[in-house]
Amino acid sequence: MTEASIVHSQFTIQEQSVISHAIAILNQHFKSKQSFFSSPTSVKNFLRLEMETEYREVFAVCFLNTQHQLIKFSKLFFGDLNQAPVHIGIIAKEALLLNSKCLILCHNHPTGDSSPSTADIQTTNAIKKALELLSISILDHIIIGHNDSICSFSEMGLI
Image (tube, helix red, strand yellow):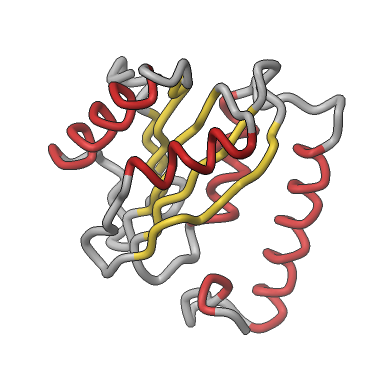
């Protein structure tokens, strides 16, 4: 089992298998040519399945094309229980290599509370400002907590 696939001990092996299978189905669905990341609910469900079970803070990015189709979902930065280091240059490089023009940022709060911190808001603004120079837009930043606790910067008017 890879470090990225380790889930909370509250899930049985059978439940972990079901979660992995659901993620595979969603990945296939979102990568199909007909599927778009246009529904906030479907995006949140996808990211919740991908991120909620992480035992430490993980910062990930959905790289999208101009039609909001998922090109790639990448867990890029791994931290501890309270933070994950984020490097804008790595996000920019990956977006340019993938020819991605739109991004959805995502990270989890292993503590369970999805409320954005001051550091979360500042980091998002710095990423947005830097990537605007490359004509890459940030559509949203979603924070995943526990028990359906999900925060969308877009819905809160922070992006």
